[in-house]
Image (cartoon, rainbow, N blue to C red; front, side, top):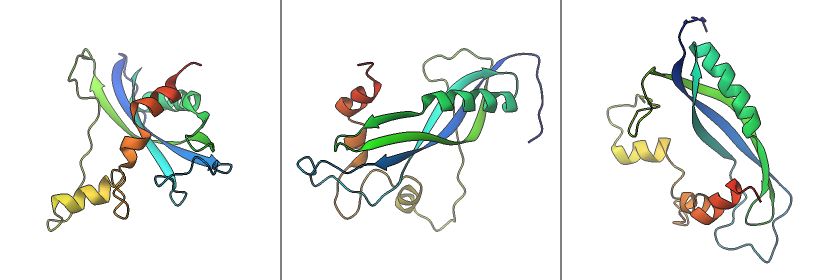
Length: 154
């Protein structure tokens, strides 16, 4: 990647990839119909950074990502280690103010003309529903109670 150093600082958004590494055994009395251990979990996180170039933005984001690694206990009593994998995309926002509605990231995906919208969503955004169970995993993982427990300082 060619480095182009600018004299001014601008806003960039950077997409980071994390992997959830689960260890330990679930507590048998807590296991319910939503529990599964057949998937690997990855998380995309988009952060904004102020930098002087794309390379500089990646360096800042990677340093921040390392500090975002964490370990916690999931609702089933297993230990989850969130590990930084890679910074994969960087988008120049510019030197504009970050008001409500400011676009901080975009991505275009090229697919075949015969791929319908449902097939597109299933292929690139499959995390919402497991076809075999109709369980909404995002709702379970991102519900307020679980998200609050991850972000609490207690």
